[in-house]
Image 1: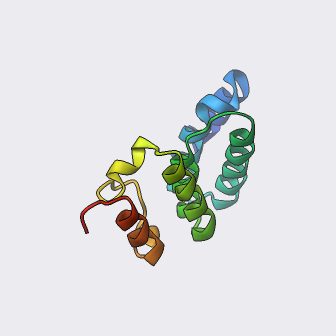
Image 2: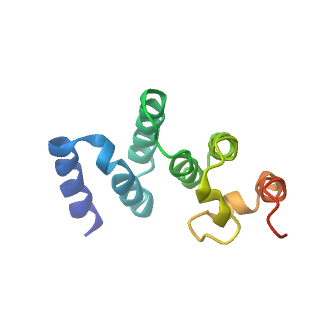
Image 3: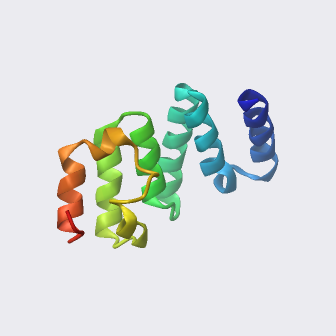
Length: 117
């Protein structure tokens, strides 16, 4: 019933505002394989991040889900530069997709952070 759930979340987002529900919608799109909708939503997150704070690790994650590794790592770099506390679990958090974990930039970031290899 993913399609029905996403339709309801989209309706709620129109009523209450995009910012509060973007992450929930992105997860739904990601898990349901709605890549074009996920791409559009993540680009909206980026625009929001230019105006106000939006957790860069969330944007990085969803670019990873879209297999856009360059953008994912650019946002992970922002996390690193901002000393984002969410990165302390970078190596063990199952939230990060295997396509990012297998990239050498992931290991390099883990190393720069001083996390155990």
